[in-house]
Image (cartoon, rainbow, N blue to C red; front, side, top):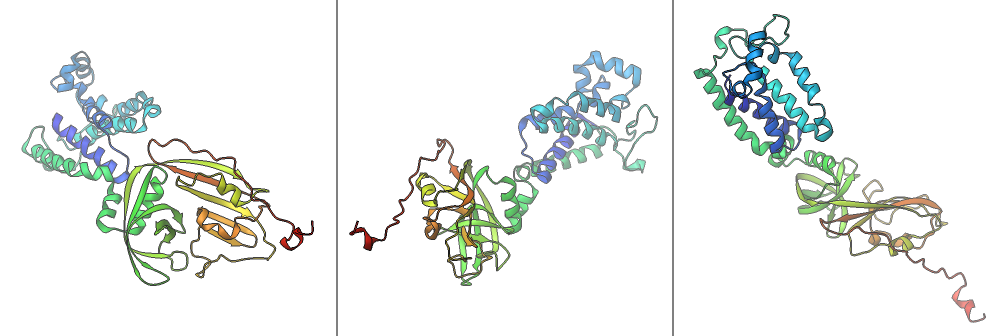
Length: 373
């Protein structure tokens, strides 16, 4: 096949791989795949690469002939070993070279002669089996194939940037695909969910774009009107039932997390250490019995429905909670437990550290008796 056909076929495989497997294409790896797709013809002096490296091409053709050694699995394996250091630099570069080289062998199997893929065995690999369906170099059939490959590569350029599932999600606005997208990329960027849903409690329609905070029970946690709500298929575990959803990627996100041992401290002390002007979330479990036995959350809906702070049997569970959700438990002293404080930072924002904090003084003497002291 000609140079243009080999480069076009390698490009289709490279961009198609990005579309199906969701790796991010770039010009360097694409160029490596294109160059590697020409390397097997270094055994042919009239070829472009053969003329460039004539001192290698001429001896190779005289000793082995065309489409033998350089078109074999042996050489493919040798190339894979030689470029193995690229795995430490960027794995995508490595696979671009190996895939580009393989694309040449694959395409040459369509030629009338085929390739000696299992060299030094004389067994020749051709496809299709019917000789009349195979292509001559530079023939009309190859030009038709080249045209089809160029059209396919052009169509794959935008798809390779977003991936097949992401592109399908934009078309179908499917919530499950949006959730999988977020789980795959959570923590790398700020995300919003463009959502059409039904409120499971009031049955009212809900539409809009809502910032995504995290995941919950095969669903997502979003912020709506300053409150966190779970979106998902379960009417018992989620607040909102999604009808249509699309994930929207925002600016890069940097998460700074700090673990805090809570034994002997109150949540008021923890909150007082946090700069309230920065976006933050609290995650963890704290044991803080209040002397009244097992308790339920203060909300009226099911205990399985998402709550940023839920209290049962003396254990407070925090899942992306903030100070607004901690009111009933702020002054309870923790027996044990640990809380992770996550600060979510915009690009260029300085790192956030917890301050010293202040404990609320406990008044152990009843007010009625103070006047007698």
